[in-house]
Each structure stands twice: as structure tokens, then as C-alpha cells.
Image (tube, rainbow, N blue to C red; front, side, top):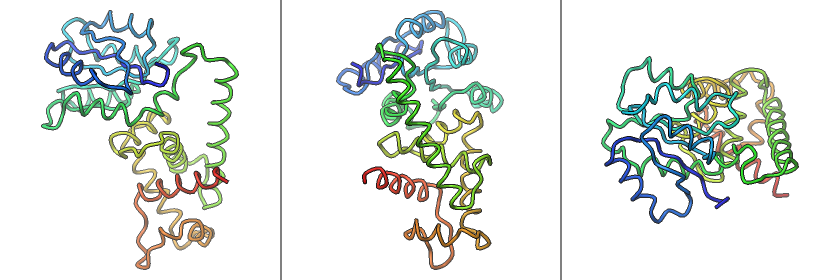
Length: 269
């Protein structure tokens, strides 16, 4: 059970509830702790089961998903799950409010490819990250939690040093976004979709919008690959496959992937 991702579904449409339940019948990576269409019951289930992730439909008959979201993500609560929202709204103000409240990702129910299977695939691909957010679940010892925190601190510091070697400054938003993107991808263990999974993860850590994460990483790449960068030779030495004879810069995904490969090789020694 501890190896599974624990999931709570807050959805009031019977057809959607049935579709999620059917998709989860033979699922080995996800443990369903409950399905409810009630805001009140959802809060009770979160407090009693502490699920890794909550899939929350914004439009509820009993309660309001928009009001429930900031309650679930409130850092002052004893436990805050990772929240994924499903909705039919296209109101930009509402969507911005959700992102500001700390929602990990928003699934648009209006698009043709939307369905419970799409949502569950996203949950599974973020498995390592989601399980890593557990705070004291399953009787985890303080020593074990401390070891995880120490590992995170060590890796983030190592990545910051790598960035500084390349000419970035750790306090700059562009550097922080790149550091967290590499860290989240490294810890995930599986390739993550940049726009649908990785950028929202980083955005939640840095309290910004996913599109800002993308722009900041792009900015970091431009700074590092600029011909005026005094550390450019070191960059080329560390990432020779990203050196383009036409002078083109690598994409966000290419640099993140190259960094993950580099870190894994370093720690495999």
C-alpha cells in the first residue's frame, strides 16, 4: 500500500465517478481512498486518509470546488495534498485564482481528449514527486523524514553550485526555476511533460505561474549560452551534445534532460 499513490476523487457527476472507478479497477500504482461529490465529505476524507493527491472538480452540487481549493492547499493545515483540478470554466480570472491558490495542474473538461484516463496517467507520471511530498504518513520516523530533507537540501545545493559554475546567480528567478526543474525531473524517475507536469510542479514550489517557469528557464539558457558569458567554455565542456554549429541555443527540455543525465552519472560513481 505504501508504494502506491493514494488518491481522493471529488466529483459529483455519476458518469464521471463511474468512469474513474472503472479506470482504477485493475490499477496497481494508485490506491483510491474515496470518491465523493461533497465538499464537506472531501475535507473529512482528506483529514482521515491524507491522500497524496486530490482530483477536484470545480463545479460541485454540494459545496464549491473554488472555495475548497484554498482550504486544501492552505499551508497552515496539518496536511495539504497535491491538488489537480478538473473544470469546464474558461474564465481566466478563475483559472488564475486557482493557480495562485497552489493548484498543481488544471484539466480542461472541454477538450476532446479529456477523460479520467488522461488524469490518471498524469497522476502516475508524477508518482515519485507526489509520494515525496508525504509529511509523516505511514508512521514514517522523524529520522527518515530528516534524511529525505537532507537529501533534498544536498541536491539543491549541488545544482545551485552547478548553475553558478555556468554563470548564473542562485538568487535569480531564472536560476531557481532551472534548479527546481532539474530536481523535480531527477526525483521523478520518469520523463515528465514540461507544460502539463514539470512546470506546474516548479510553479508550486516557487509560488508563481507555470508559464513564468518556462520563460525563466528560457532566460537562464540565453544567459548561459550568450557569447559574452565568461564560463561558456565550461558549459560546452559539460554539455558537448548541446553545442550547435549554427549557434542555436538548446531547448528547455534538452537542457533539463542533459542536466538529469549529468547528475545521475555523477551520483553513480
